[in-house]
Length: 190
Image (cartoon, rainbow, N blue to C red; front, side, top):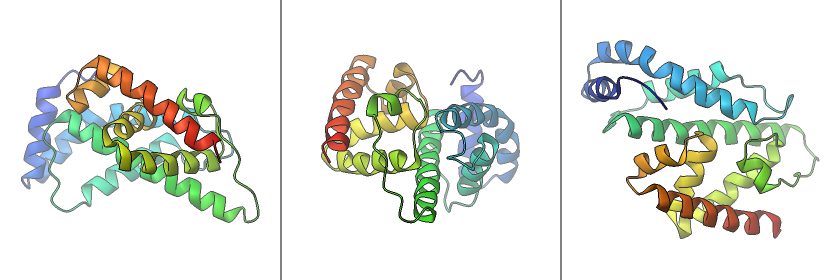
């Protein structure tokens, strides 16, 4: 997430959360590039023709949902990007569910978890299946589910994920491996 003004972003996020709408105007150009990079990485993982969203549209939708949220309160920059990842996940999954519904009669394609988590192309149904499995994992181990969400949907590195979750890189690495194994078993065991 290599932004150079993390302190400034945190100050502006807090000001915005306290009702300073001018802070949002100053914040937007600071975070837009990072959000666009994350969105572009997610869009790259989508198969051509499977997704009608473009990176800019995804960022704009995330931005609109955040701006229109009641009582926006971000503790810092990492919290902001963690919330952004969750919103991005919801948008992508909702769009995939809508496209799958539109295709009436088409069966859900199997998704190879290794390919999905490595960011290669996947069908809409795969995104939906991954989200469904992630919801199951969230009930068993919320932190492991959050690691998958941050790494897969937000494209964060091990180090960035550790920062967001306030745990060690080793913990994130271990959670990543265990969560992928659990999800693989859930998704391929159907």
